[in-house]
View 1 (cartoon, one colour):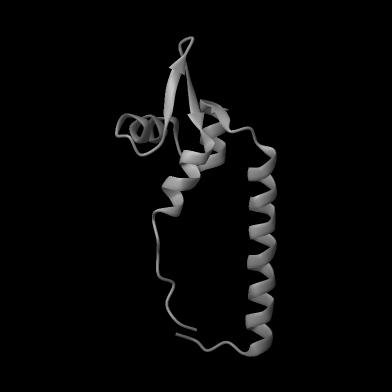
View 2 (cartoon, rainbow, N blue to C red):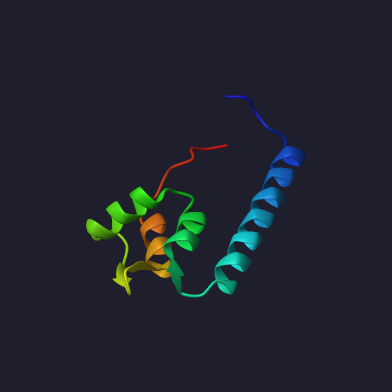
Length: 89
């Protein structure tokens, strides 16, 4: 694994911070309940996968007047439950 210097580390940290700020801003401006189409964009996945997650109880959603309504917070909780290790620098 290549070594990175302090300047590169700071540049990377700045990029990560900007990405986090954009993500937080988007999440704070979206309504809690999303249409299937909105949820697909938000979760960056397919309709089929979202329906599977709902059916298996990983995220909360239901059909209202024949259309799915998905809880955005349950998507966040599902993604946050999947911890990963990025190793050491």
